[in-house]
Length: 354
Image (tube, rainbow, N blue to C red; front, side):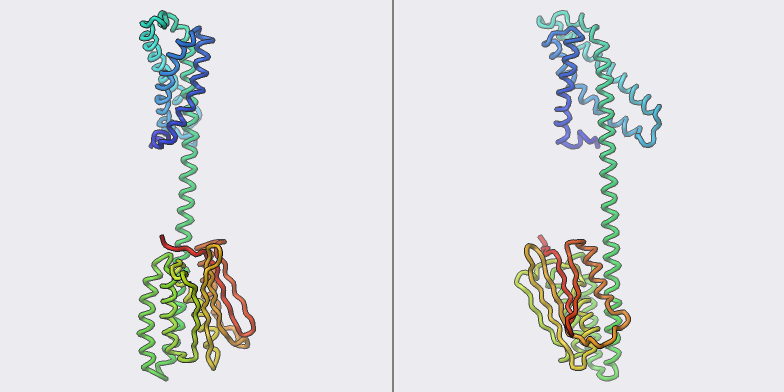
């Protein structure tokens, strides 16, 4: 589509740009062509208006001869030939206009004085057309730049989506590995609880598949998934696993990346509570943060003297990478220990669905 005709805002600006060009042509017709002001104005206004639309055709010849791939002589021959032909047609149009105006008393004899301005109009027409060619090449360059920028943005979005999908796929295998170990431990000591745990695990995985396909989910759904996970682990730990949860009103509608909190709670269970003979606790605190943020804090107790197990921290690293990919500098991830307390803090934008 033509960049000027296809955008209504550009056409008035393009026509306004012809006002100073028309004024220059009027001055030349009066000073060099010997025409009066009224005669020059009567010729300049309709001729410039018509030629402004005629010069729009330069867009198509410019697209047919791009600067990057066309040689110098091809460019010169194409556009100079087009300029001469279009300008000649414009001069013939001007001559017919002069003949028509000469029938009026104010313009008597204009057709006889027209040959004196013939070279002036021809040269002006060539220059004006070549100016239009230069404008078209600028527009083509701008269009190519926009297309390249659009492709770059699309490539970044695709890369971001691919990275997020890759990170999501790490969540389920990591969790299933831990759950299968739990079920394996229960099969010999309490087969009934092992069967119950399998049923709860299946329910959790169904919810995981539903949420994992989305880019953002309401916080209430993410918390429901976390509770489903804890119900699985509750079979294993019983009263040894205690949960305390505080959420401010209004935060449940905030959107968060799916499978964001569950890996953090899983980390608290796997590397904290599971190593405590007397059991432990998990505190989840979610509140709004001014001016438009969401603060999530997950705290648990652990045994500082327990050796660090191989693979520890995979879930935390996964969440940190997903936050960085989803929000960039708008989100923060902090981990700290204080004696036998392990605290994970998240700060992210409080986005809500429209």
